[in-house]
Image (cartoon, rainbow, N blue to C red; front, side, top):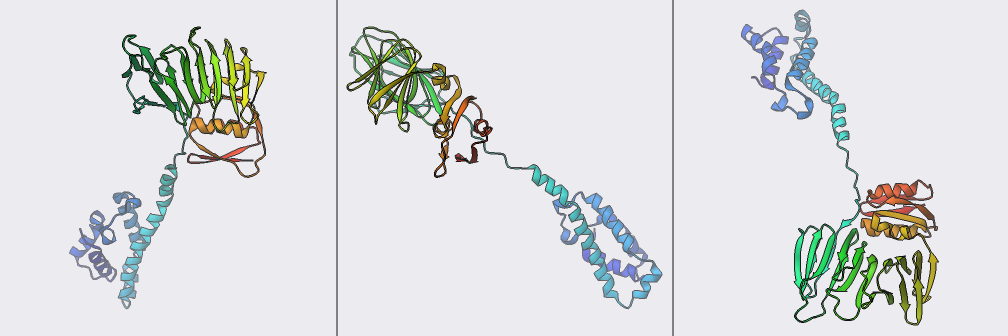
Length: 383
């Protein structure tokens, strides 16, 4: 192998016709020992063997006949410069020829769009002693035992209480289950009542319901299937209002950022109570309580719309975009921004809650009256 300096020296001697037979053979064998300037082969210049051929062909084409070369002996430095220029020119041409390939590789590695996935079974259990247990990710089985009640994770997304002993002291103990934004969970209370908790919600309850009544406290949204027990009424306290039942199926929506508390009855009967105000609901009715007006209003509704979230759907029934985006924000754990003086727009339709958020937003955009810009976990609503 020879260096670039040796090659240039021999090449200059060949141009002047002064090479010895041994030097000519060495120069001719350069095809097998060629090195680029500074002994560097850039990875972006391609395969070395192929470039040998390109470089040799370019050099051979640039060498004039011997009788012509001899006429330029008076300028020997030009020949050395010419050799260097040939090497550099070929290198540059080869490098440029590789650029489309390099660009294609860069274009092929396009950034993956950031996906905002739907919520899932996530919740935190706060025990009577203050200990907090993260439920998502835990194996099924017994988590704890309190005052004769066993707490079990029976399957993914379901926590169940069961009485194991009626002897001993009957002490009241309260637990609380919280779902974050993007979370949901099911709960089976010690009396057999089943509760589905929506995202950004909490429920405080007795572990065993000792005494003459069953009371729970709700913040957010939950669907109840209350176990019947005529001798022990079941009451849900929510933001100063009480929902009293004996055994029934109903949904309560009572988020702090909503102006109304809505109770929707599917089966049985419920009594809505707030100080001196009282209302009775029949199946298929929804009772709304406005804290500012301090009064109940009752209307007939499609009850399946009210519990669609439990079954994995968003149902928009001529609702304004601000209300819709609150629901999307809670389930997908995103922040929503509205521009100033955004005009009220109403929408209707049904969309799966288990789609990527982009699909939900696209279904709203198909109306042509609203658009969205997503940056990370922030969604901006645009007219």
